[in-house]
Image 1 (cartoon, each protein chain N blue to C red):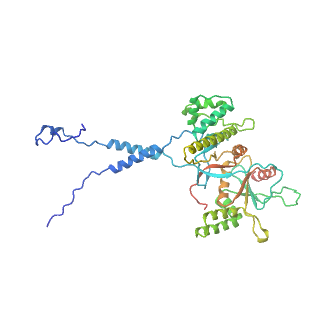
Image 2 (tube, rainbow over the protein chains, first blue to last red; image 1 turned 45 degrees about the horizontal axis):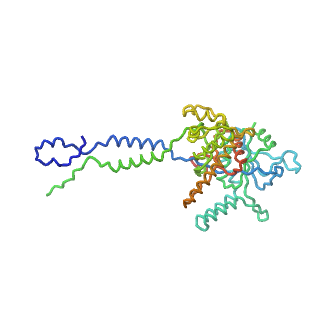
Image 3 (cartoon, chains in turn blue, purple; image 1 turned 45 degrees about the vertical axis):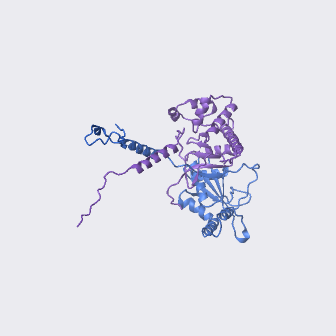
Length: 219
Length: 220
């Protein structure tokens, strides 16, 4: 029995009969503590702290007039198809026998490894990457505020071309997929574009002439 | 020479602080734990280097491996309100029990005419259930309605809460509603594009793609 000995009846001498009933006021808490730890372990192991990560992408509104093609200044177009295949071409697309008399566009294959896509994008976007690195250094040395840094970095990504001064426009990446490309590859590409500090990118529909090119290349 | 008496050590440790801490942690974990409902489909999201967290107040669109679309609203109140509004749209009435059960659900990928049946399924049956996906083609674009009504209901509720807070003289912090797409890495991009099209048709141009944080940063 776990009753508290008040000591009222005690002290009647060493040979008191009541002394035999004196029991410990302590309760054995071991099972309770065992259970507590069991629950603790259970909750620690089952709880997931990981909240999903997200990447934000803006999507353009459908232009009202689709016939007017936007002039792109410094662009690279990626074409994606089945089996994680990815091709690219620089600048504008020229079909065969075009009226400008330009040589038809050819596509080059690349891959999603660090050697392929990453180096290609870094190389093509070198002016911006270098400029942003410089800005980052100035920011780290506390020469410019973080808001200024962000503003300048975004301005750098969307810079306009000034041919007289030898300044090229910020790189634009166009992402085109055919009907067999998987979502993972698109995300990989957008991720790489963000890592390489490319500010302007868009997911656009593939032209039939481009589809012919990749079909020829992938088969 | 007096003998140095070593203090007699007590072999039993006082464990009270440890037990206190253990109970504190148990209480913490029990209170913070939220029951995770079974999703109707397992989606293996692709990896990225983005470390942005998923916003709290979100309408989630899931695209599974087969390219089927699923819909979910994180806020329970908005969910139930949206269901009532959708019922009006499709001339269906839901019983309070059904609405309550719907509020507890997560994503669902069934058209309106199967929704009652899907709500009635038990957890076990839902696991085995193969969702046909929320229709999003131009003939029967239910996903567009779900998004539109979800958006409207969320804004109305936020406005009500704001006015209520104003009337008692408190400030109300509005967490804007965000849109997230959770698509399987192996799903065809065309299916994802269709879902994106539904969003842009509803004048939603910025949204989040749910990804896993890539481990091992060999590229940098």
